[in-house]
Every structure is written in structure tokens, then in C-alpha cells.
Image (cartoon, rainbow, N blue to C red; front, side, top):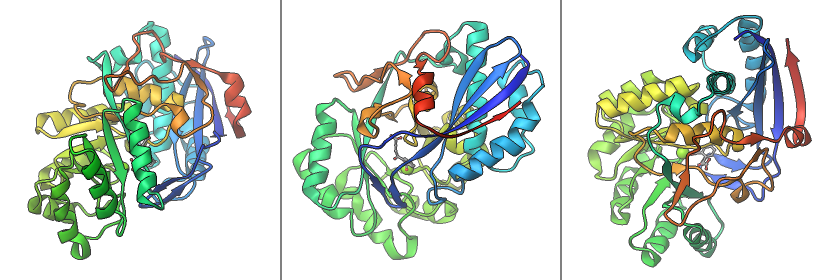
Length: 370
Ligand code: OSB
Ligand code: MG
């Protein structure tokens, strides 16, 4: 398939409310949507899930746009690619920019799925027809609001709750949730806000809450401290921000820095890298699951198909758009069934329809490289 153009859209879906995390507030979130067109007239969509400020990882909406326009597009326009491996090797010399790479690679996978008339699930080697999903509860000013959020999520059927925590906002909300719901699958996400020397005893004391895992309590580069913490506690440590590549996953596994890995295609540079991490985790008996970055329906479609692989054994972060946004750019929306699962489409292509009218409606800026 010969790539003739790349359209890069900066999209802002209106958020229903600010999502508070240990690294800061997410409001007016901007995504980059990538559209590739081939000489045969096929179009493929992918998403680069980014945040405006480099607080979660180094990338920003602007840096991602720049990487796509100036460095990735020139390496692929006018060239022929048959497989996603060929395609990504065209820009493998570019260091970093994993979200930018993910947007381009996913758009290419979408082209492949159409060319071969197969589902993303079958392209990715997925095996499950439905996947359990969990939901994130943001940092809130008072405990009663957390309890109301948890109750709302449970009533919608979510299979597990992930509480966002930070120093001074952990024991109180976790105790309140456990008191009311002693048996739900509960985890906490520290988003790098803790420090080993200062908080290790506190973090170990979370054992009382029987968490399915504690996600990224310490800064991204702290493999050594995460390993020290994992050695001190029975709570499984899950790494998110620390894992930007297969090499990071190998480092974490070798150092025993975690028992679980959160795999996000937009954080690790695409689906090929995500699958490599999935396989490496499986080889070492490390648990894995597919996280999210509040993607639009386009990004979620790829995450959902990826999550159907067999070593993704924990619930995915895969909430329907209406929990975060007033609208979406794909149809139909995701449906959480009473068993806490979302069905994985077997339909050829993306498995969802891209509403290009809505994509245009929510586009703040667009660039075409051809
Ligand atoms: O830490 O998992 C995280 C959103 C943006 C950036 C980082 C994170 C998140 C979430 C949302 O927790 C999960 C989702 O997409 O549903
Ligand atoms: Mg996280």
C-alpha cells in the first residue's frame, strides 16, 4: 500500500468534568487523530493520546504534532508498505514520541484491516470475545464524592475500581471504600506522586486494603526504588509511566520492580511494541492489562482489540466516552454488560464507524502532509 497523505487533526472533545490525578488535572484534553490515505483510496485512522503538558510523560500535544508533521510523515509519504513491521521501521530512527508513533501505526493497522477484510482482533492475535473492564475514580475534594463515584461505577457494572491517590489522599478514601465494599476488586494509582524514602511505610500499609495492585506509586525512572518497594510488600506493584518500551519492561522484570504491567499503546509507541511487552510479560509470569489515556473511540477501538490477547488477564481501563466526554467521534459507543465486560468486535476494519462530521466539528487545528 502506497501512502499518499497524512492528515493530522488536533481534536478537543468537551469533557464532562476535570479528571484529577496525582500528576495534575486533566481538562480540555486534546488528542491527535491521524488519517492516512493510500493511492488506492483507502483511509485509515489512528490516535495519538496526549496531554497538553508534560506531567504524565514527556510528550505533549504540540510535540506530538511536530513529530508527526516533521519527522514521521516525511518518512512514510510516497512509500509502499505491506506490514506494520515494515511501516514502523521507516521511522524507527526517531527517538521517543511514542504517542505520535502510535497514531501513525494504528492508522496503518486500520488500512491493513480493510485491505485484508479482517478485524483488528484477528490482526493482533486476540482470542477473547469479551474483556472485563474497570473504571478510574479521580481525586475528589471529599470522601462522599468518591463513594458516590464508586457507587455509580458499580451500578454500571464495572468489574473493578481504580482509585486515583496522592499523598494525603489515600488512607481516608481507601478505608471508606473498603468499609462499604469489602469484596470489590479495588486498585489504586499513585501516578508517580510518592517517594520511596518518605512514603515506603505508608505504601506498605496499603496491604490492609487488599488491593489487586498498586499502580506506579513512584517516579517513572525509579526502577530501583520500585524493586525495593516490591520486595517490602505483598501488594503487587504495577508499572505504568515507567514502561515506555519493551526494553523498559525487560528492565522492570529483571529487577523485580513489578508483578504487573499496564500496557498502553500510546505510551509505548504502538501495537507492535505493546504485543512484544505482552509476550515478554507472559514468558516471565508477569500479569498485564491494557490501560487507557482517555482516548476517543478511535484509540479505544485499538485498545479493545489488543486487550483480547490472552495474557491481558486484568480488567482494562476502557470506560465508555460518556464518563469523560459529552460526545465521541465513533459509533456505536462502548457498552459495559452486566457481567462487567465489553464485547470485542469481530467485524472487519476498525469495528466502529468513524463519524468524520464529528471529527471535523471537534477539530481545533489540522495539517495535511502529502
Ligand atoms: O495513569 O492510567 C493513568 C489517563 C491519562 C493519563 C494517565 C492515566 C489515565 C487514566 C485514565 O487513569 C484511564 C482511562 O483511559 O480510562
Ligand atoms: Mg496509571
